[in-house]
Image 1 (cartoon, rainbow, N blue to C red):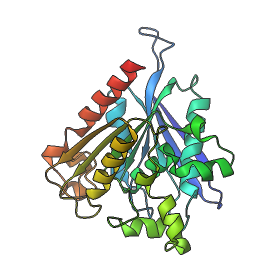
Image 2 (image 1 turned 180 degrees about the horizontal axis):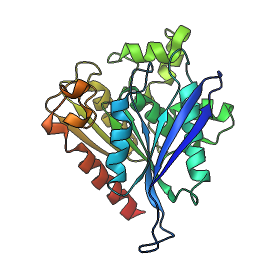
Image 3 (image 1 turned 180 degrees about the vertical axis):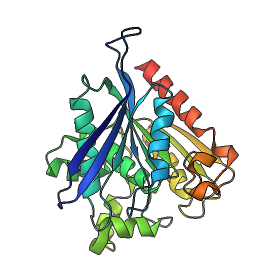
Length: 274
């Protein structure tokens, strides 16, 4: 496996870090193999990016035959659209280097956790189109082929995780128009790729209503969505195992531990359909 590291400059002078886990091809199997790939966006309320939602997730997907990339995007004091543009640049790099990195450029999924889920939704839907165009990107060229969300921040309305939006927007946190622009459920349309989503009903940080609003928007727009709502567990569960538990103790929730297998099966079905 090749381990890659790239720096991605932010328009505000900040720097993001893109880490890649690229599976080597073997002459014993197929030297020309390309693989489906996942871009992982950890959560952290746009104030940090969580270790627990980074490499452990990447290695889970590598173990299932996917290339995986983790973007440590810029957070506060960086504000919108800095992280969005860094995610777009990550997609551009991955598609531009498909041959060298053994990537199937038509099968790149983005997987976001919590606030990283908001960033993933921003990248994959029309919510981010205007800022992308204004900064030289063709939104359709860098849009992922699938959108995966784990306990995502979605809505800036009644069920908002206000801290995420405060950190994302900074001094503009009370701008009603901008808040509408970054409320993901308002921007689901025919260009939105298929969606996989999971959340716990008892999430006491980002209410499950965020995911329910997204489900409703996808249904209304005719966007394919597979959603799993688990009966128990708090926020930020990652894999729900001891490997990703806070301090090695908390956040072990057996009922959510099936989500990686469900997500991988879903991706494989999408890939089979082409």
